[in-house]
Image (cartoon, rainbow, N blue to C red; front, side, top):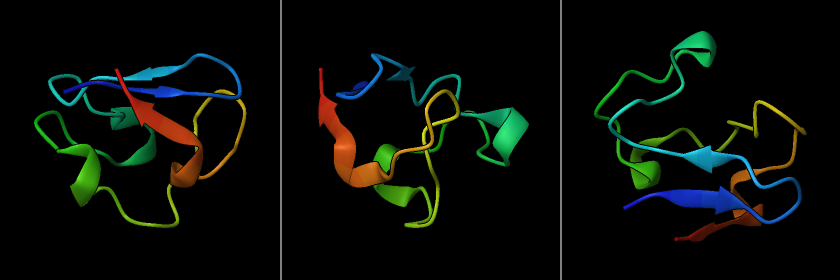
Length: 51
């Protein structure tokens, strides 16, 4: 399941992850550390919703 940032529209895709910020491909959104922030706008995980 993909998640979208409600602030800027960035879409987190678990198949891709966020390698630039230490999140390996295949990492479920629920398994991302709580201190991770949106790579585009910097808001926290609580600002993401499932797509």
